[in-house]
Image (cartoon, rainbow, N blue to C red; front, side, top):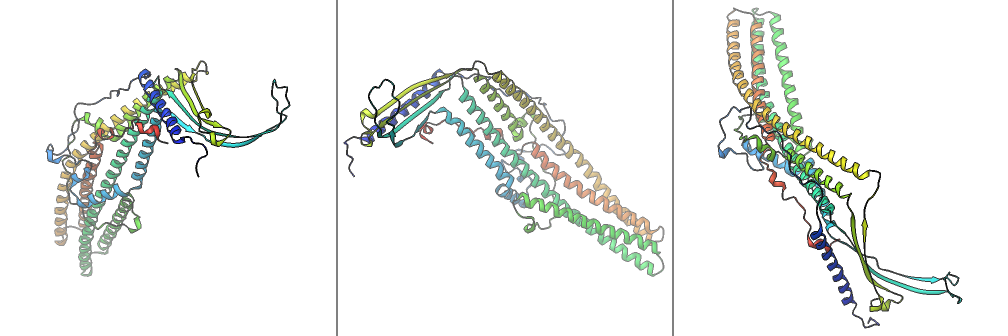
Length: 506
């Protein structure tokens, strides 16, 4: 249907929109040229950092080829099955998925903060028909009034923009970006914790596989002893007490085997949850632990400040709290808001977009707090206290990081020595059992010596296996304490900057 009035509405619309966008650009340029940022400039506080590590590992210095693999730090153990399970964790673990969602939320919040760099442009078209009363009051009129019915059509465009003269918007975005980077570091920490937990559970399970083999072998040895003492009892050489003592030892060892298998099942179930699978349908084949702790390059203590994601999270929290101090300080300064409006209003829709129907307005608003009961001062004091708290938490996280590394270094050194002496104890126990058997068969001693030797051998063999498992899990936790192969530079790209396209986005 042809429009009844020959006006170029498209041209008029584009003219108003162009004018509003020009106003947006002008306001942003003005704020950028005149503004300043109040509040303290962020500088990472110092923390107590030792020059060298106190503990030393039981290995020689790692060669460059032994460096922790970037990202996939678990590959330092050269275990293909562990590699596959770790990939399952990265792809299916629900706690990791939740941490990724928190990062996405933080990224969106930073984009929300960046939107304050641009004016808000809105429109609210309306159209209605009204009837005015014939008895309506009209000051100064002597003529009688009559009822009047009319149409009102309005197409307004409004724009408002807060001049960021004192940096409130900039500080808000600074805080949002610090929070975003903190969430990115927290994601990396969750990833590190989960992958380390899986590796520790995996090596514990493999140690239990080996320990179960030790106990089964002891059951076999003790069963042979049971057969021997039964045979001698039937021949009238051994007494019933010796038979009962050997049977008690055999039954006790069989019980220990069931307990070991029960512990293995619990680790298998834990691995299932970490890899995002139901424990009922998940299983790992038996594979006794047959590995030694790898050489782990520790670097220097100062590197911990850049390699630990949890330390990076604490550091980014300080940056966030510092920005909050700046935001609190801007409350003492005026808030200046520019506003404007333009559009068309008419009684007849046919003349709505004509020149005489145009309307516009320009204005500004200055809000300067004078008295508010000390709210602003109290808020500033609160943000400064929160910043001081974040500094203390950061320094505490650094100290805890150093403690965990030293625990790992000293633990591996002591476990290495303990494993060597325990291997000697196993060899001594085997020789003692052989001598006790020979002496018993020769009639030199009672069967109690054989039972004692069997029990001692089992205890020492289990302890030797447990020490190997502790060495592997301690190595895992040392890599975790060192931050894996992560580096704080990886979160620097997580930063939102205002983009001009946002001026025309909802």
